[in-house]
Image 1 (cartoon, rainbow, N blue to C red):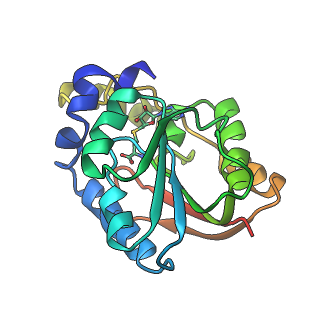
Image 2: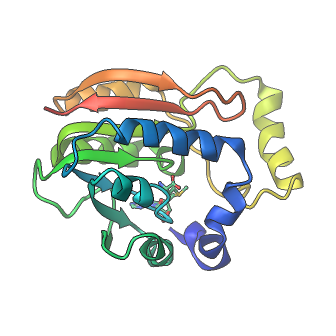
Length: 207
Ligand SMILES: C[S@@+](CC[C@H](N)C(=O)[O-])C[C@H]1O[C@@H](n2cnc3c(N)ncnc32)[C@H](O)[C@@H]1O
């Protein structure tokens, strides 16, 4: 994906740690991962700049990271030289069935159209033995027409570096149909307390 190359990739974390939501997400994941058994394995796709790699390392979780962008992976490698990091596509994960205990898919869904998400969700279920953690910024919610137009405009006026990145909204029903259609069950759905982005996390039981 072109959006995550060059200076965008190099400055990815520098630009995002300025937002409270970044730290809230880190805390959420740290709490979750701390409950996983030491020695468990996780696939993080897209691993991006490797924001969660130090957390996996801290709790003795064996991490594999996949991302479409070699430049994002280069940043991730600096976080944890021992993690297994590969370029790849979340729509067609190059791992055998049921080969990892956990999968984490964070901040990807809003970047891909519904037809891609419909391929990504079953792939996550296919490779995961226990739980898949899928984060969404953009499940469709009632938004005034004015807000839909003003949102991207305000982001670009604020100089937010992600203002140009496509932002797909997904229907809850499509997400849940893809999860259940892949034979998995939704364990819980959590809304992180951020009024602007309203990040939603699906914890899916794949066992
Ligand atoms: C917003 S970043 C999220 C990275 C990380 N999960 C996080 O929370 O910071 C999106 C990442 O998705 C990657 N990406 C986009 N489409 C992808 C795909 N189909 N398969 C794998 N990676 C993809 C991009 O290269 C980029 O690193």
